[in-house]
Length: 348
Image: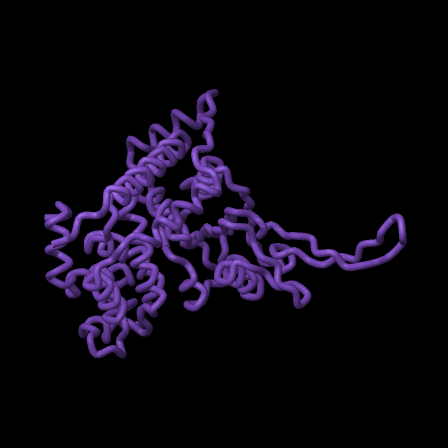
């Protein structure tokens, strides 16, 4: 049985859910559909993580990120990643400054576009590894190093990157170690027919939709702290660990299909991100406890970019998403976790 959360915790979860519902409604004034994508972006914010949005051109990925920044009252910067982009172009650089009064010369650091709360790394795979590495330091350490000096980035700090799954010629795919820094890899799909018709109505008329800010940076920081305080049963921690370990072909718990199709599986950071994202999802639904359903629902977006399939899988048309789907079927949560879900009225 799951012990009932104190009244103050239940109230905090309710306020969290209401705040993000308000945020979602503001985004919906500009963005049609893509509800699952919007929710996962909000989960990444709550869990203090970064995300990659993968989709073909024209699906409003850039507009979605910009709208989110407007609704959050965050300083927003968009960086268009190109083959000639250098690390100093995003981190900033030291320039020689001459004092007009004394004539004294000194170096001053001029901040680059990374010094913002929300950074859109547009088409991140089109810039060389050297520039990608500068971005990844900022993502992991929340700081940049220029001229041997460290410069802290503002809080909160998020990177939402985009990738185009087509036209891969001349690109620089992110290595596995870089992909592991992203909490989610979010797939942005085509809209439904009715949604596409609504997009046409909105974008071909004279009326422009505006977004009102609903959350400040300080309020968002408070919500992030609340996410960390959500309790998780040991059985659910074991479930997250079991999913990650089962994806590793060298692990004794790995199923035969993983050994057949996977070269490299998810590391410990995947388990951490599963739990953090599940905490944020529980709050988003007004609960102050994590359920097995939260972890299972987020496993595809957390694991798909951390599982490297091999040539045998490619030959059979097996993707990392297919591997995750089978893992969710073969790796079951502990009985006590399912009992807790049923006691809370979650799932079947």
